[in-house]
Length: 311
Image (cartoon, rainbow, N blue to C red; front, side):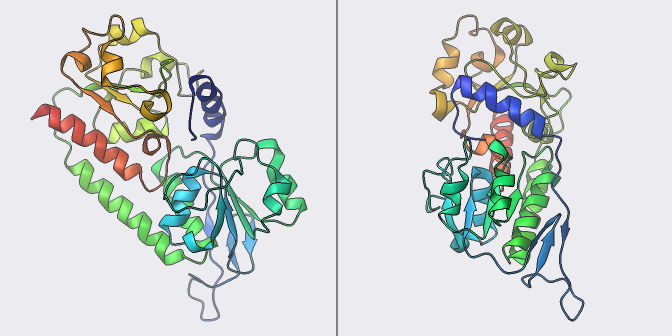
């Protein structure tokens, strides 16, 4: 996901909802002469993409992909990232756009691998015509999708072992955090705010699945029972007040200047449990909207906030 305003957010979510069903492609490592997995050896194949040599000039046009590339140790190979990639801080940020990708601008940097989150403007075909390899990292629906993308990027960049290590650390960290979730007679309820227009997520989305790991109940699930919103319904203020969530999680702090104070001041919200008990949690917008390695940080923030309130 990218930096959002309310109107751009709605359009972005609509596109993301269509992409959520796409699972990451399986990885096939080319055997070495000894018959063992190639690891850092080339050529390597991931899905339909084969790289004959280790890429040394990678362009990432998706913030989550940028985080994954640096996490697996491919940072020195990344020569340019899009204008929304802001983590890590030393990523080589440019004016290239993932929203409106320009084949000529991309080709001018002479990349040997381009990583995208989706195929906007039929950019994949345009780059294919220029003989530029492309790997897609579509919005994840499950943690397994995240793990697969990290694994694939490790293989494609010659950092297979590091990629596997990142995935294992994530699994171990998530297991430890989940083990800390207390056994409850009744699950606390929550509202996750994507923007001040009150778009949210259901449990069927990637973000919603993280809250499920934390043992919380989503007030938005009933609003998308027919699935027409693709897991991203827009709730009314009246609906939220009536649902009376125990927690409100804000992922629109940086983009839209929302805070515990602005939520508490909303008309009719003073009686909501989350407001009365001071259980409005300000998340990091970027961490809460990406499906890369920092999803561990998101889960930690959620579990810490909810368990702290119960002490």
